[in-house]
Length: 113
Image (tube, rainbow, N blue to C red; front, top):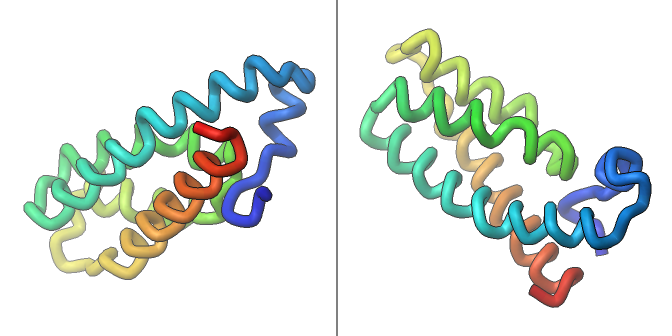
């Protein structure tokens, strides 16, 4: 439990309200894996705007669940925001996608979802 994500900050935010934490876990599962797919596609297509928008949207959830890749996600976001065509953020993106995949599987298991 909580190897690929952490609930410490979320528990503080939720004041240990387990129903609220469950609702946020469900929201994570509904949104983050889908956003990760959009982010991957946008990057591979060189769509700077979509990459920026999707990474920006994912930041608060990645941060509150403490996946440990917020800095990498920001690099991907900035690649899109500043249209850094000459820069390669594939490694950072791969780390973000891997973290999302691992956290998704673990949250499903931990919350029986």
